[in-house]
Image 1 (tube, rainbow, N blue to C red):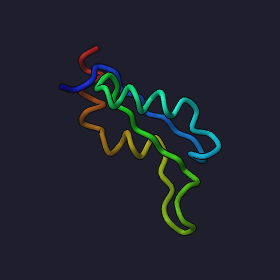
Image 2: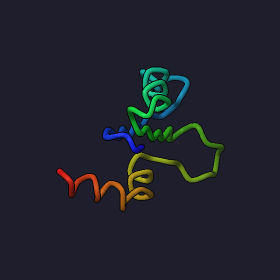
Image 3: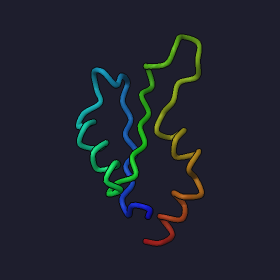
Length: 70
């Protein structure tokens, strides 16, 4: 079963800025939420940073389908 709600969350650092992380993970674990996180400054130096737009682009087909259903 796919959750009806999708959350894309972006922050600089998971340790400093990942607000409500445990709550979102709990909802995702119960299949109540599809949860996607991009922490742009957590990767090693020299590795391309990940932003919410990158996650949404990767999931473009699903995002477009959700928008088309509304």
